[in-house]
Image 1: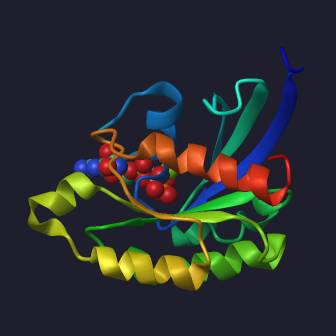
Image 2 (image 1 turned 90 degrees about the vertical axis):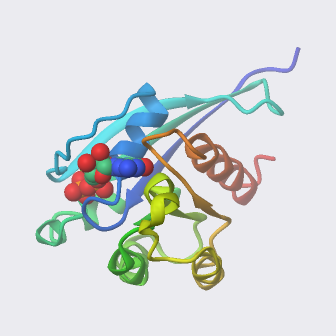
Image 3 (image 1 turned 180 degrees about the vertical axis):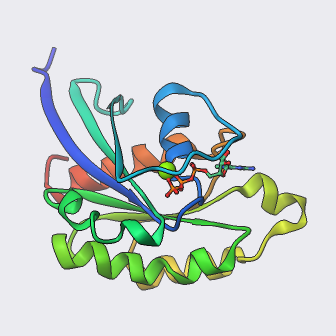
Length: 182
Ligand code: GTP
Ligand code: MG
């Protein structure tokens, strides 16, 4: 059997307040969901081992930094981006302003980590979008993904566990490729 290779990657989750960043991380790490909104103060930190079927001898740990999205935390966020390998840009499919703000998030993050790191674009709350509350079209998401040069655009639901795991697995594969580990 091939020797185990270990990797640890830091990933930052950003986007406007209330778009569902904490909920996505909680769904991925603990497979739970909370209906009531508890605004993140500063940051939340979680770790999770990712198993990629095609690389059974890789031991990959993600350090997930889920940052406070509300405007008044903008001064505390930049130091958290340092050393990050990748970014998850998140907006709420039922709130157009959160989509329009993604380019501001990109510039906030890239001021610290530069523009060469992999990212993924996530439109969350697809369950509500499917109930008639959609304010951002799939085509708009795809176009923004191109503009961001992100690896993918995913429409997710932390509530109903739709496409949550692929966010983290696809991004992990992209980091491994970028750093020439695969
Ligand atoms: P900040 O910490 O303020 O930056 O917000 P956040 O992006 O971490 O948002 P959070 O995960 O706290 O979710 C905000 C609200 O949206 C909560 O009431 C969640 O229950 C709800 N929510 C999150 N994801 C979904 C989803 O996929 N579908 C639905 N219907 N509600 C969601
Ligand atoms: Mg939060």
